[in-house]
Length: 260
Image (cartoon, rainbow, N blue to C red; front, side, top):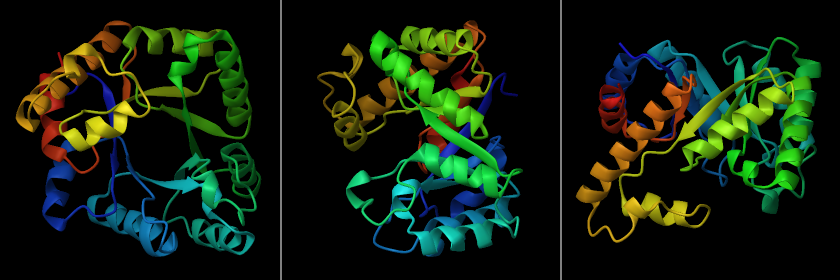
């Protein structure tokens, strides 16, 4: 039995063959990413989330990128949410390049709107632990988190990070600032070069990931690195995690089994 709490992020394309494996993992919740911006949110993310919840009976969270909703779509969203099929959302700013027609282009604005219209709706938001490296960016991030918490956010899911000590410092800063919402450590298990190329664009890679020749070696190193991150955080009393393993449920099981 796991000695920590975890949730999973999934894509919309998970095959039916993986549903049983997902149910056996028993995550606290699953979040469904909004990845296909060429199609309607309601045809993709919302319908997929409703279907997953029905098939697995696992608490399901939809991603709500603020940049994707016009006023008409926003009120359609309210109508759907009032049906109580889905009761939780990870509210994000989204892609600002496509936000021209968005009525509430920021995550904070959308969180405030949902909290006012649906007081019992469960709101999750993201946070950025790398801001702890700078007093200026940290102060700005904590101020935004406090505003999101006031707007009903109960859980923050961190963006991926590699510096475990920086994440620990970030959580301490948040608590000292009076933030009481749960802060879940966002862990990406890097298992292939596509993921590696993506992460290199936003974070400095640890030395253990450099000069790896093949995906087999990368997967082994990636899983062990993630296991070490979880164990280090657990030792500091931080036991809430969100795994960005997309639809790779086999890796999730290996990770869970490897944690002390």
